[in-house]
Image (cartoon, rainbow over all chains, first blue to last red; front, top):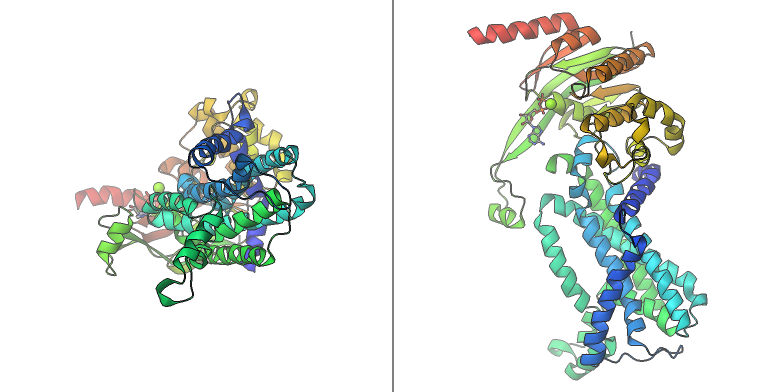
Length: 278
Length: 248
Ligand SMILES: Nc1ncnc2c1ncn2[C@@H]1O[C@H](COP(=O)(O)OP(=O)(O)O)[C@@H](O)[C@H]1O
Ligand SMILES: [Mg+2]
């Protein structure tokens, strides 16, 4: 509880550091904030060409929205993923890249990884805003679902924050962490139904049946991936325009708070030793 | 003078010196549970008290643990043994300008740096003119700080830190940077501080300035406290040991 107070007391610093990231990010660029859209758009273009035109991946149309556009379907999963991946990557390096500060000034160190959640989240908010407009133009009646979308966005941010708290500390002690994690993130992305629908996994799972004589299927294991739930919920809300599966939503919340609890615990335990370990 | 501003009580600080510190998972696994490090005590059982309202100097040769002690005071390091207690707000000036963002303007950096040092936005706004005035970079305050000369960088950083208005100010060897005029300004600021009943703990290699500014001093050698007391006597013993040591 005392720790929470300390973190709360640093919220102004957190806001300032987040602003520093945001303001510094696109300084001296002509297109400024628009650059934050370019990355997801380029990725979207590549994946759409490769997966929709060449490999002919066909996700089921939105039910009940009736939407049937691969690129939009893709973005509903890709934008949350990109946010998550960026928070983890940048949060992980946040303490090392501010080594000078950590070794010279006392402040609540937790604001460093958290400010990355804020600055990446700011870009994400912008991207999601554009996505909502695109969805509306394509005929998705997305407006009533926005409040729940925001709640799920907060849950994903909490989950990402928890992971980057753990990883930022690990990275101070073992610099391998960042290389290891960047490979892991690539694998993780392909293990999450972002560019292909989960129905493809369901088919494979049915074909194989229970594994090793048990009733556990491939799909059961596949769905242990927390990001699978998050992506499913975002798609249900944005693309399908329907209530998310309550079980999925609950699991998202459980994953988020579990990650945050462990992250805070790890961070708090090693916070005092960070300056000399750097 | 009866009040004690800072109490350093049997403080020892240990560093681990690794023989091969490449901070990789591989080396951790290779080491196994047996870790290959030596303990190095940078501070050994140091105790002293700093009276409220005094200017306190820390002297000693390079590597004697002065910076380590200041970092313990500033809560950047945590001592393995002993405790440090103090009254009121403490601010440390270990390196000026750390935390400046090169692309942001001086103005934006004043607010950012102020909040890193623990000031609220209101406080910074209130002291903004004073900070800019003291730093002497008014003309360039809306320029990105990467265009500042290193002297200007230091001036602005120092101006912010000194306006945190702490009860205890901890200063490492940062005074040696900046031109003579600025050093004059800084010395004056320390005098103001003292008059306001605040405590300053500073490290300096210039014995003249310690003698001039400090009323008390402590002498550290290889992590051990050799002598603490009136500045004059401590400096005299320190200097004497240097000359005596050469003959030994
Ligand atoms: N982070 C660290 N890890 C290992 N050794 C350190 C660290 N910081 C300081 N030391 C060691 O502690 C001793 C005291 O250093 P320092 O306090 O910087 O000396 P001074 O400021 O008096 O010149 C030195 O021998 C230095 O090598
Ligand atoms: Mg030093």
